[in-house]
Image: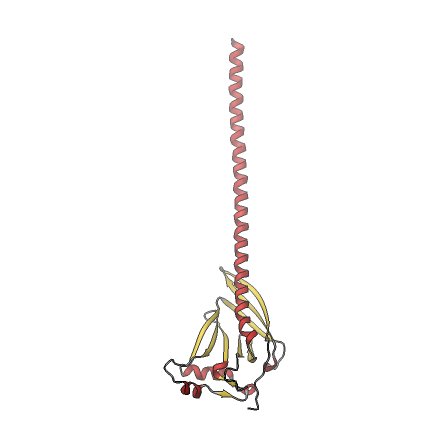
Length: 214
């Protein structure tokens, strides 16, 4: 009988040890799972951040490229702005104010805006045509002054093209603006409290300079 009681106490003792071991193993496994889940969460977050940056960069490139690709030619090109002869809507071979697009970075807001001529809705067609100045010597025209002149008369509208631009550097494949056929852009964008540098290059699909003899 005594031997049976001793075996019973021994069995109970082993059960307690096993329980302690099991709890220890469970704690270790739990800690490992927590570490693994934290690593997975970090990886998912990093992947989401990368995807967000890629989407933002791609969108910025696409929006800028859409203007450059369809433009006839570059009228003026500087580090943080580009002036484009977008189309020859008047079919005259020369540049009219309504055909010009000014793409500029506002360093205060970090927004790259597209500026364009917009006549009041209550203006008649003859009044619009009269105000739509023709520039027969595009190479010597001060396009900044043109923008300023129309802006002072309240005839300029603007649309945001790209937001969160910390820095912008534009360049062309030749020093003569009218001859530029490829425009490169290096941008530093703000993405989720971080910065991302992106590059874009777009060619003018159908390059056409103004007929300056008109």
